Length: 229
Image (cartoon, rainbow, N blue to C red; front, side, top):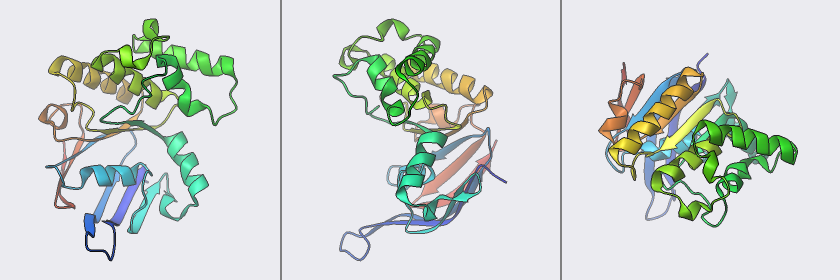
């Protein structure tokens, strides 16, 4: 069984209204554990909408999404939140870090609903920050960091709950080529450790990278083709 199964999924925004928009139409695909899959296509093609559905950040209008064999579409919100927290780590285009908080505080945020204890939480966070070579900035406010440093903090936050799946939305949009390569190198390491990675991007540097095992090309809300590399 595939890790993720998307079966005939449709996502309609504002149904029945004048501004109704079908963002995803009859999308079906499967993603195996350990894959690096990229959703690509022009702006407005539906790749970010499909990514948010796969990551349980939104519910489809119709269709099924299975994560580890569980149909997450049917789950009550509290159970969906648990799956989102346990299975997925998210890296957003704008990072969505809290600029007034320190690096360490930002990384710890996803852990606060859990009963781990302060010492365990700090040890886990510091271990990840050290690995990403940003532990020396742990007490700095995020607003004082460079773009590349903020990217590493966003990656650390995505890893803090030990997710099996990394979801990244346009992760290189605001990075120069050197920083983009550093990001790809980090993803490569995570993939070798068994993480499944799903990225939405229109950056050829990402979707043409040898790291990618499957490319899902979208246009007008539909999957145009799937290329296995």
